[in-house]
Image (cartoon, rainbow, N blue to C red; front, side):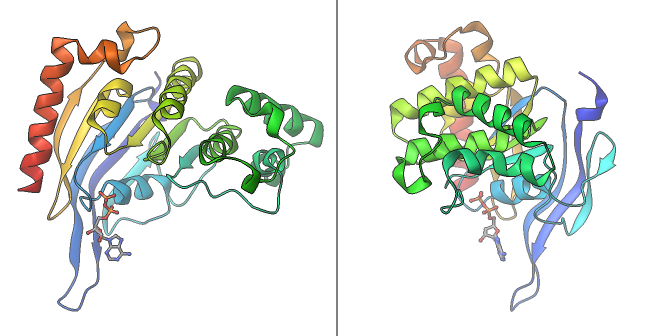
Amino acid sequence: MSDELRVALSGVSKSYPGDDGPTQVLAPTDLTIEGGEFVCVVGPSGCGKSTLLNILAGFLAPTEGTVQVGGDPITGPDPDRGVVFQQPNLYPWLSVRQNVEFGPKVRGVPRHQRTAEAERMLTLVGLDHLGARRPYELSGGQQQRAQIARVLVNDPRIILMDEPFGALDALTREKLQGELLTLWRDGKKTVLFVTHSIDEALLLGTRVLVMGTRPGRIIYDEPTAFKTTLTNPSFATLRADPDFRHLRDEVSAHIYAAHA
Ligand code: ADP
């Protein structure tokens, strides 16, 4: 894939001021993500996973270092980098359809076109029959689907997800994982996906990063291409795969070491 989608962090660190001077929450970090990669990030709470994601989103400026997409510096949020958080943050006063149409509307997309795009996204996430409802009339899983549709309608080339399925029941989670994989494959997206679940990281990712604490840093970075052999991702199939179990143990060992 072309270099224009390459995400490159060079010497990126983040510190916050404190009573006893600045605290570094992210040590100087170099990281390159090629266009089309699906990078999963795991690690103990507080190791800087969200900080890293928020820097890539353009919500946080690094204290030091440079962050670039396709050679251009990230200076703030951009619709080309869609961000999905764990908790859906839909506008409660708009219908589900209006929520999904909101981004294109702000970008000046004509009404008929944005209505068609919103409908296509709602169909993709299985919510086309609920477009007229308000967010509070939806279950948590449906709200998260709407949130994903609202981000994807902008057709971002880079998708940044911070534990997007963490609050969902197991069935809904597996369904959305499958949909995300289809979208990543068909849409040739680059994905950075933060999760607490090693299984989820190994199931979805083409690459897994483990972060350690004090200060937050990347301590492990390996390819993980299990899903390429699966038509339908299934934890049951994967758990029986000795290579999967081996990598799972290895990643767990690094996470435990990071806790120590
Ligand atoms: P993770 O996503 O891995 O749980 P975070 O990136 O949320 O970790 O946080 C990394 C560290 O940065 C934590 O110790 C957290 O307390 C600290 N932190 C995050 N935001 C701030 C802030 N605004 N001010 C001071 N410390 C912060």
